[in-house]
Image 1 (cartoon, rainbow over the protein chains, first blue to last red):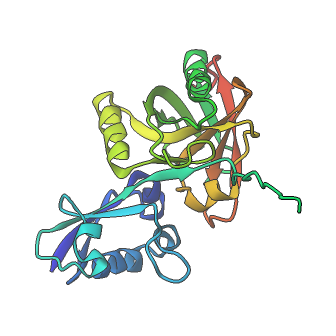
Image 2: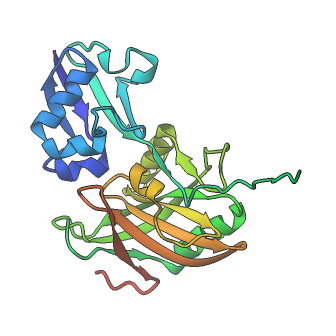
Length: 104
Length: 153
């Protein structure tokens, strides 16, 4: 199936500045694989070392979050649009919880 | 990416970031920075022309964590487009902590974006720094901030 993958702004520098790519795929997972086959440097920003989608990488098939579908196994059809949308997270530190000691 | 990155921001917008950090203390604040790259080739010079303050979605742990949902990102991008700009980065505060990115920041960062961190010590904004994630994701590169006097033309 011919599918378009929308590339988010922060990753376009690794995709020859393109905002989308056309791939042939049967599932969302294959579409993402097709994208990283074209632009290998994208892979480490999308996937962990063990091949899982990073938690802050959100993927939509047309307008639906794949988490509510079959995730990367979600089938695609001709003309579908797979969008990669960032979420942003961070934080200063780990909280140190107070420890209460009891004297016996 | 180029070796030296520069971020220009007006005094007013810099104060806007500081003020947001002070208002949300002791919790982390967060928001989008809207602007543009001045040098399309190297993307080394960037200016912030607007802010899009957001609600920290980590209401489970707002003292030390922040989160911006995909929907928030889309809203920020829409606002940027309406003004002929793009989202060039994100700011957040570190309550009672230095304005340096944490390991958690690094693990969750995206490349290309500028990440501005403002330290808020006992409710008072202090240092403000900016960072960009390296291509290999292993570290950040500091980005110099030029506040007020526009020298990036």
